[in-house]
Image (cartoon, rainbow, N blue to C red; front, side, top):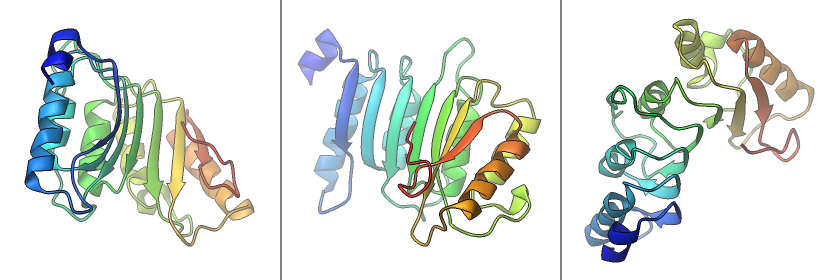
Length: 196
């Protein structure tokens, strides 16, 4: 890690912070790696996130692209602070297994710079936007409050039981109309089969 600290690194892939038999020593090592890479890191792919790791990631000054999977989707939500004035935020964000409140907090913190967002939603029918699977209703509230000015693309990651075809297309168009700006697509192989 001293080499990373000395020379810097722009991209880290497949960083595992926890889960699947990992112990606290492994989690601590992952945190040390993230802290060592923080000053120069621009792209990060990480899984098994815990709050301490997300806080370290949130402080990375040059990070523009984050693909992350949380360790426990049922964890208590973490409220992230706003970014310091003058600091650019994420442009690309993909979240899986995040606690809903934590996911929304991360989006809110980077709302001014996010251009592409990929998030999980359920397969449920499409009621009014404020009742859609998280955090679509909250995204609409954030957009109406002046947030998400740069968002151009929203990709919905679907869970099991997803209804593809016309049903999904109608749901994506309903979210697109409600958000009034970004293109909304489905990542499911039977639908749009896209990722951001």
